[in-house]
Amino acid sequence: MIKIVTSAERHTSNKGWIHSEFSFSFADYEDPSNAHFGCMLAHNDNELKPQQGFKRHPHHDLEIVTYVIEGLLHHSDSLGHEQDLKSGSVQVMSAGTGIEHEERNPGNENPVRFLQMWFLPERPDLQPSYQVQRFKHSERLNRLQPVVSGSEVEGALSIAQDINLYLSRLEKGQQLEYPQQEERRTHIYIISGHVEVTCQDGEFQLKPGDAARIQKSCTLKILATGNEDIAELVLVDLP
Image (cartoon, rainbow, N blue to C red; front, side):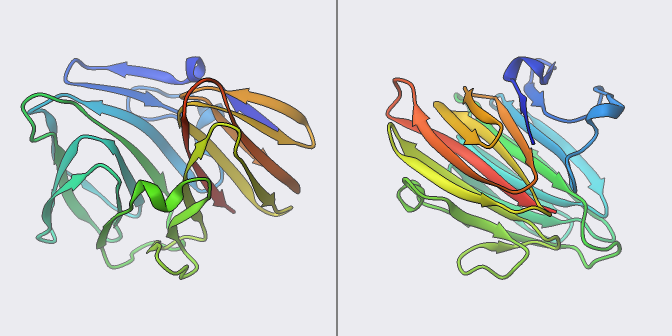
């Protein structure tokens, strides 16, 4: 079973200093029928203006994954970490028993675009932790590159949940296959470009900002289409 959620169906939040597109209920957007997909609670596509940011605020019992698409995002937290996350950086922050952090755009000219995904942890009251790694675009060209995993996948950041998160950059005409398992879910989000997703339910054309939520066993095929040289996407395998 596949459900396509178009870019237009997301909730738009524009506060002036930040523009966000929410895929699930978040902040001022409340929709009980769209509160989560498995253990995924949030999937926000944010664009933060120069010299703007989130003031220090707390979290607990969340696994927070941040992917910087374009620009520079400055992070600091109550564990003592402080650094600039460049384009291609992936961060995993386990809030556990409690952590405070802030994020801002330190630049003077360009916005920063970043995805942020929230997951329920495998259990509450974990020790807070923080990891970050910058991944090269070339490493995920025409392949699914694992960047976050709860299964100790080599090269991927660890997370306290049974998920696997992949990034991919597909050249036009290139195709990927992903074996959707019966007891699992798959969430695909198109960052840029156009792709065709094929499963037992048919063929579906996805554009930037569109997402596919898939359940039940199916071999997924993902084909880069459109006129762009590259289509970029994120794929999350979760329980």
